[in-house]
Structures are given as structure tokens and as C-alpha cells.
Length: 338
Ligand SMILES: *Cc1c(COP(=O)(O)O)cnc(C)c1O
Image 1 (cartoon, rainbow, N blue to C red):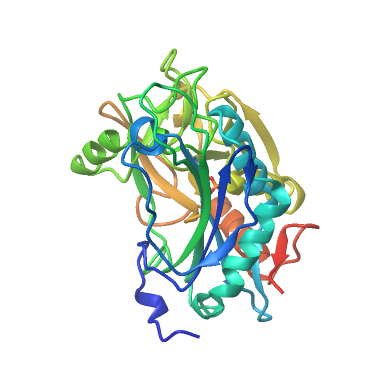
Image 2 (tube, rainbow, N blue to C red; image 1 turned 90 degrees about the vertical axis):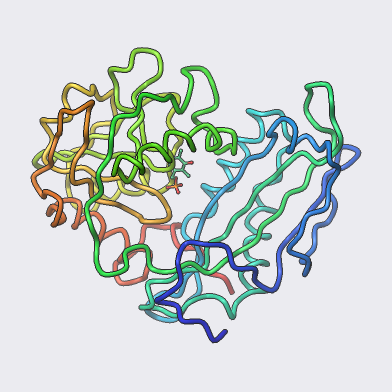
């Protein structure tokens, strides 16, 4: 194992030894290989640089309690990047090859997989982008699919802290646009919203639907769940990114905790009725929400700004237990790297 102080790692890029690269040209992907070079050399007029033709994924490899090195539901990341590719006219990188590439990258960088109990993980970043020169607006003919990995530290240093959100006046996703795919372009346009939210003292934006601004959608990089009593409610909309974490939480709520689950449009006007809320994504699993500020009107959840509510805590502990091998996982969720 590398000599790294796992606990003090942040969420930042550190180059590791190997990355996987496959190039697409003349209508086909090449065999792909692990390489040493962390830099990408492409045309100054590459489609990714001019017209943002790029999509990505994010998942983690980590060590379970019994010492296995695993990833969590990589098949869902493989399916999602296929959907993303189709939506912005990129060639599909086959699902079996995606899983194989994930395995190759983890094995080649096995020394960077943090030990169980450190709270750190090896974050994997698969992505695909258009590489040939374009000036007229059209899909590229050549692409690169790449996976690198980087060790990241425990998300909550010094314990979980509830976060503060504001309802954004900026839009994240158009009703018939690209909100449901994991494309870099959705993130570029969220940066101004994010920087101004931070300047006002908020951790994240909560985006309403762009058409009516009356429904709750999601945060810039995380889906949202609400809790009332034994019921979990999560917004349903065609412009929300289908989070692997949120889909897993919905299953855990129903099948492990016996909760009632509603996936339906959620009105901004009803969020004050909920007792707890959380943001879900690979990085933090669940971030408890302390308050949501809707243009000066503050909705404070029952846990407040210092503590985590009981349902969010139970969901967090059950799902992280499944991931870490201390709670029995549903069939197919834990993908061991052998
Ligand atoms: C990646 C992402 C999420 C979280 O998805 P996970 O699969 O749980 O990591 C949520 N919303 C957006 C917009 C995202 O890009």
C-alpha cells in the first residue's frame, strides 16, 4: 500500500500510476490499454474543447470489513454512460468493456485503495470525449474513453454536519434538455450558481424545475430525498439525473427499513411539511440537510443545523453498511475486484 495519510486526503485530484484509455476511430473502439501518461494530447479544435462533447461517471473502489476490494453497482454506471452517450451523439462504450476497464484500473492501482475503516476511498472517473478537430457544429468522428482514479479522503472530517441549501434563481436543466444525463455541460452552467451560493453562505443550490419553478428537482450534483414519519418522498422528473445512490436508498428504505416510498413531483410549497431531508450522491452517500432558504423564507428541518435526524441516519448507516460489508447486500450490488 502507498504511504499516504488517508485521513487527511481531501476531494482533489492526485495522479496515480495507471489509467485506461481506448480510442474510437473509423467507426470502432480499439482494444484499449493501461497507460502511464496522465496528460491528454488532442487537437486545439477538438470537439470537446469547442462544443463540450463530453460525458462522465463517478464511482468508488474501497476495502470492505473482510478485506475484499470492491466497487458498488458499477453496472449502473455502465448503463448510465451508455444513455449519456446516446443523448449527445457519441459512440457507446460497451457495458462489458466498461466493467472490465474499471477492474483493470483498480487492479493496476491497487496500492492506492485505502484500508477499511480509514473513511477514504479510491474514486474512479470514467469519461468519454470528442477528440477530432471540428469548426462546424456536429458530432465528432473520433473519441477517447478513459478511466483514471484518485484517492479521496473521508467526506465528513470531524463528523457529519447538516448542510444549508438555497433555492436557486438559476436553472440547471431545461425540461427537454440534458438534465438526465451526466454531461460536463450541465456542470459548467451550474458553476455561477454554485459560486454565488457559497458567497451567500450556502453549501449547495436546490434547483426548482425550470418550466414552472414550483417543483423541487435536485442539487447541482446530488438528488434529494425527504422524510415524513415512515415515508420517504423523492422528486420524479425527466430532468433529474438518475443517481445510483438515490435509487439504492429507495430500495433500502422499502426492503430493509420497511418505509413507504413515493417517487412523484414534489412542490416547493410542501417542503416545509417534511421532517428530514438529505442529498444523495456517490461522494457523501447522504448529506443531511439542516435548512433550505427559499428567497428569505427559511425551512428548518427537525434535526436542525447540528444533528442528523433518525431516519436519515438509519438510511445512511444501512447503505454504508451494505457497501462496507457489515450488512448483507442485495444480489449483485457489490462487485468484487479479483
Ligand atoms: C452524479 C450526479 C448525481 C449523483 O449520482 P450518483 O450516481 O449517486 O453518484 C446527482 N445529480 C447529478 C446532477 C449528478 O451529476
